Image 1 (cartoon, rainbow, N blue to C red):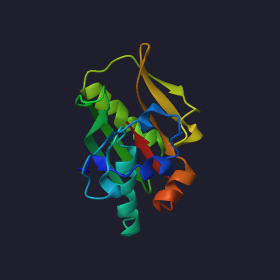
Image 2: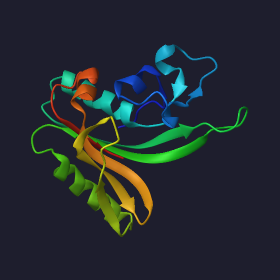
Image 3: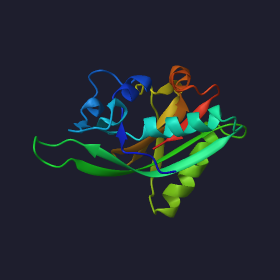
Length: 167
């Protein structure tokens, strides 16, 4: 998929991002077309969940999507933001669970030549179901996350089934 890099700040609430999260520090558009496109995203997760919700609400029984996304991290005032590339995968429907998505992530990382990957339990990401998510770690660096989307987050996007994502 290909989604817009401009989003609404309300989407941070929908993914249960804490008020003090550095990801809420977004680049604000000076002349936005509307509130729905007033900031540049710092995470691609809300965009993926919107795409999954669109598929779910159009009665597609299952969906498996990915995006080579861009995220924008603010710098000093008057300077351009840091443009961070990201890959995000999202899925719902029959045959999809944590392990099915993890298999796709492992193939992707192997193809990219990333070795020494470990999956460590993650309980501090409020967008994901506690106990059903993991940090993707290489050496000492966390390079991503994977898991089942928290039921409250699914509900806020209008996804009436279990959904999964990995970044």
